[in-house]
Length: 461
Image 1 (cartoon, rainbow, N blue to C red):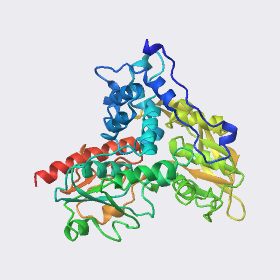
Image 2 (image 1 turned 60 degrees about the horizontal axis):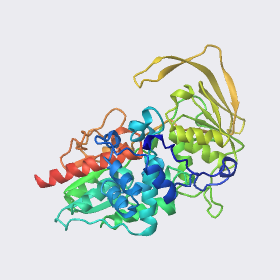
Image 3 (image 1 turned 135 degrees about the vertical axis):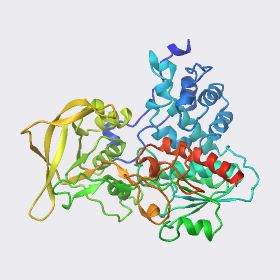
Image 4 (image 1 turned 45 degrees about the horizontal axis):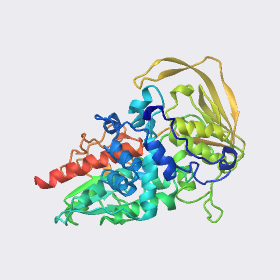
């Protein structure tokens, strides 16, 4: 019976309205809607959704508690495995993970697991009813570098286990990519990110901002001089990549990382702030991932005519389907099978066009996506004032170059095993600093694995 109940739709801002503001797109479920959706869950004996979740969230358990009306129990169940439920419910690619593995999805629509996680995370935060118990202090100190999702997940688990944990953050605000990378209309900062970080601090985790590890302090000084017995590096991947094509040094060419940091962390979209940000009349965003969608939708909200430039077809877009759908609703233009070869400037050194070639799809590459092949003699220009490069990021090399014996790969990522152990005993790493730019939930999964490995390491010293 349950699998015949249609998926409960989620209320959203109208596209024409939301394309002009930075308020959250999705309103989320109310209790009645959440319980209706929760009733669809089959409560499988061998839940594939749990296996597909990087943090092993006990999904059928918390959903059955929502269905029964035990919201406090559901919030407590989620809190056992996730320190950021309201964040994950909003930004995780559920369609490729828990919802992608849902039995109901084989012949119909999967349970809206992400929307239910968001609902219960928001309920727990708004009611203030959630309390998490920690083990007594065990006498051991752990340092964590960076305050993004990997670090917050690692810190929360270690604090629950009785460790004294201190996070060192380079920026003036904690949160990492949650704060500087994801726009307000997808992830509200004051209403969602800040309270969930505060919940981590309530576990006893200390966060010190404006500390650049590798300059202000080093990994070795934290261990040798300040008495930290292990260090987790979760500093992310904030070094942007470019195409290395002619004209990339023109005024008006920026990385998505800089553009989004100005808009999000530094509130450039808010007239009350003085942060400069330039969009001109026409913006071209090069890339097809979630960061590209965030950048192009931000540019649209700042008043520009915004276009995605992507060298493959729509089926190959790595961005979440929901984000692509929302972008199209908001009037974003998609130029598929298009690859830039040169940025054209005016006589004052500013961007005036993006020269591109048309592409066609060939055989699949190692990622499984069909490789783009240039169509001969197909050059054409796209008029624009700003070009935003959203081509991925790599870790900043500062930590690796100031920590002797810390192995990195050719992409500059720290080499770590599946549990986060690096080439240096007592130093662990996880998230984007190991994998390169990935997702919030994968980073959190890595942080949790590293926390367990750190605990095992300390206990066997």
